[in-house]
Structure formats: structure tokens, C-alpha cells
Image (cartoon, rainbow, N blue to C red; front, side, top):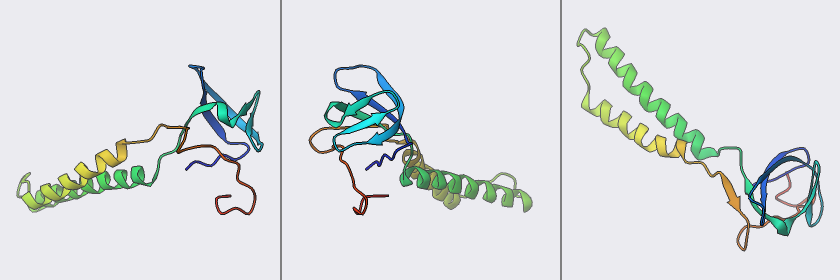
Length: 132
């Protein structure tokens, strides 16, 4: 779910037009979005493009960082004990799992949302549970 408020940047594609429109939301009417230079009815919008990441991207980045730091701290500990650069099997497995799970979470981002039967734009009034 993406919520647009007046003043937000919006990227969208109109049905039948191959170009993307980038503007900011000036006002939201009951059945249309008023942009900086245009008024676009909800039913003519084919797709909205999203700019922000989600919690999975943040969690994936933290997993990759934790796995890398865990491996590097173990290697520094091995050097401090004058053992050379020996790779501990359990540390390598643990850090590899963290990095292996974190990379797909970090790199997969939803770039756009196609509007249609399941997903549609709607006007939310003040006091509704989805109002921010």
C-alpha cells in the first residue's frame, strides 16, 4: 500500500502513453489527482512507480553487514592469537548464511505497482484508519 499526500513526489504512467510522468501531488479529489500541471482521473492511471524501500530491504542490509562483520572479527581474532588467517568452519557457515539470506532481501525491490482489478487508487478521508 502506498499513500500519497499533497506535496509528495509521484511517478506514474497513463494508459496509452509510453512516457512516465514525474510531478508532485497538488491536491487529491474524489476521483482524480491534481498534479502540478495536470488533473489526472484515477481510471486513466495504469501504473504508479515507488521510490522507497521496505523493511525487508533494511533487514537484508543488516544481515549482510552482520555476516561480514562476524567473519572479519573472527579473522582479526585469529591474527591477534598469531594463528594466521585460518578460516573457522562454523564461523564461515554462519556468516555465509547471513550474507546468503540478506543479499536477496536487500536487492529485491518493488519498482512499480500496476493498477487494475486488485489494486486501485482510492480517496481516504480524514478519520479513516488508513489516513496518515
